[in-house]
Length: 138
Image 1 (spheres, rainbow, N blue to C red):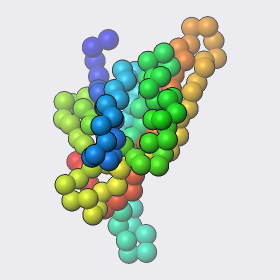
Image 2: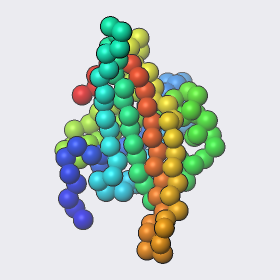
Image 3: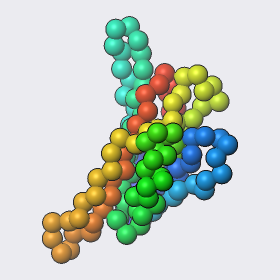
């Protein structure tokens, strides 16, 4: 299927948030039209923040890098930066800004492993990352 709806994610690579880190980028083939990037602007008690949520969906057989204990530790505690190519061919860097004062790296919110409910169902992994800061990326 060549069609990808505008608004979803075509590709995404995840990098260590620590610029000094020499770890390689993690890229996993995504399931068509299931991954998303959302921004939510919140104003609470006079403070405006932006919540960035990246939800990546892949076949379990392709998602071993996400289930690696070192990746989980890094994504949970140090955070990651995402290089995202949207389905409309625009790109965005999430979790990084030249002005580090207002941007936070993405941190692991959850990993869901769905083993499937029938023989024809393909097992999937859903990786959800989130950051809250004061910077709109798009």
